[in-house]
Length: 318
Image (cartoon, rainbow, N blue to C red):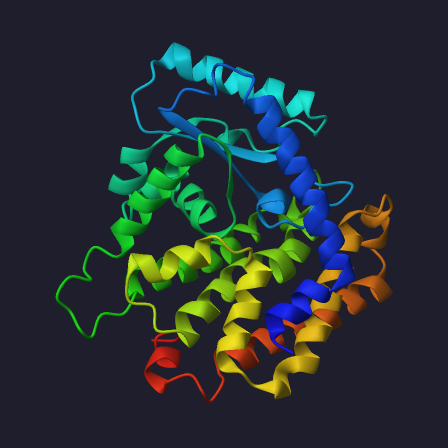
């Protein structure tokens, strides 16, 4: 059985995919009735649990607005208010990170790539979320235009180079992971911020999103925007299955089954009402650590697989 078929047959994952699909349809339906969001000069996409198709009972709604035309400051304020109204109408908790509640201009997402403004204006994270875990809520044509131009930025040096490798994209994705690792250190001594939640997310959903994508870039011969675009259409767990299908090593089958079950355990932890109390229990923390280590070991084994050419594995380190 192919790894993608194993994923498709995984019952818990199927239930989450179906739930995410229903809630995505609801979000699209409500947003489509709002005149602010039907303007083809913008698109609204969602990341997070809905973007990864793994929604549960306590999942949040993480929308982003990207424009391809100029909106006045007043219009942008109205758009953000409409976004808050949409979140409330869908009965999700209020947006937890107001730093991302803004209208991102496509030109800024492109121009700021690699510049100091990239992090300061949250363009870097928005660009990564767009490519790694997003689905369109409104104006799918505009969404595809935005994604195509962002990808074009990463593959701009491909012309006429037979030896081309997508190192620009690979390095930015790895930078995204390192940024997560550094940023999650900041709140660990702040009692008002749930550092344990961010740490667990780092060890599971964040790690999967980054390294499932890195696995495809490492296992496969990705040489153009057209090669990578189908990867963007997949959820992170689907990307991992795709990379495993390309490796075609049945010896990884048991490890993948374990990974799927461990990842589902993580998603179930997040939905528990008593997770805050559990996070302080030494036995629970030890269990989380054991499962997280097993998951990261599996991803490492995939990335270091002997079927992957040495030169591609080398670029993960040097």
